[in-house]
Amino acid sequence: MAAPILEITGTPVTLDRCSPFVAYAVAGYSGKSKRPGVTTAIGAALIRECWPEGVAWPYRPVPRPWEPAEEDLIKRGRAIFDALHAVVPMLDKERNQVASAFNKATEAGDEQEAARLMEAMRALPVRDLPTACRVALAWSDDALVSARELQQARDLSEPPKGG
Image (cartoon, rainbow, N blue to C red; front, side, top):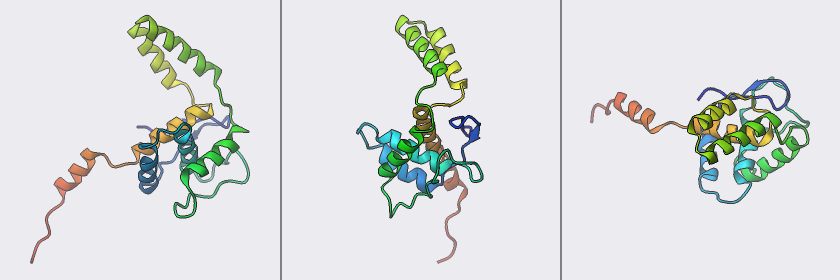
């Protein structure tokens, strides 16, 4: 996956990759949760974790980096989401129009039109907070080592020599 670009501040910002530790911690939370809002809160926390240094954060004070031993990720994400909500749009009219057309094409069984609209939606800039949270969550998954990468590393390693 290419690094996502968010335009939630009106300026394009390319997210940095989160640390593998944060990615594994997030996978533990998000993969098991069925509670409404948890994945959104985690996504909001990830926006902060992946925000590049040197780029202005959308509000003050800037949340410090996450310290797992000190702060629950869901509570942190909720606070970040609530603060971002005050300065970032919740809806993107253009994205909603394309999504509505996609739903109509899907309901009508027009697979070609649905595929075209899905590609059009993917090409749209991420300007709204809910989409930004989903994108950040998907981006964190990309920081995890894949099973194929793990097997390749095992194939390259040699067993210890000696007694």
